[in-house]
Length: 271
Image 1: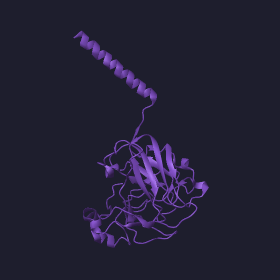
Image 2: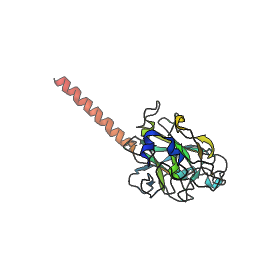
Image 3: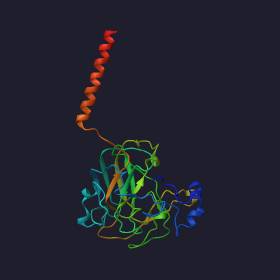
Image 4: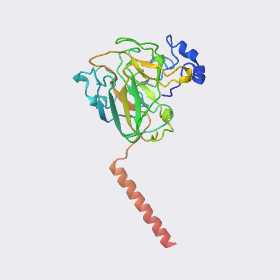
């Protein structure tokens, strides 16, 4: 995701407070899936070329029943259902891995899929990435939701950006590694880990809106929820992906390099 104020170009340029003043009616960010200007990516999009193949560091928070604590359900293609998920719970987290690397291409590089049943009951998550599995870097996020929404409350998707869970089930929230380019310790062309961290949503976590324009803002999403509380992860799909070569490929490459070296040595001796 580009983390720009997508539907109000002037606001994108100036971050004017006037844009925040009208956020309760319609925010400046991309709208729900299927609407003009939406950045939602369908689970069936041909742009997705790879899905997560492994997981680690699943640490569910409170308010998660045992039936939802199956991290393997976050692997493979997004199902777009309400049940084929792993639930993070309040402030819970999980890290997904891949048989290769995500790299920084043109536009969105990967997408995170949640299981919201409609366009406004949105449970949100921070997204972090790492090249080495130790140093993680969080995408910037913005939340213009003006007040707590309650356990069954609604969020206007045009009020949020840079948070997973912006779109209903079957549609992923895109993330663009350009947003993290230049971070020391992160190789945006060799991202091996994607971590999702639940946003509890009661206003104790904050976005990255600049202080000079009135930020940061508290982040709200439905709270409290129980049983399957917090972010419900369906899958992570990759758009720009470099697979790890098979062992046979490495062997062939090695043999080719040895042959080239031997040929060059013979040529030098002949000369």
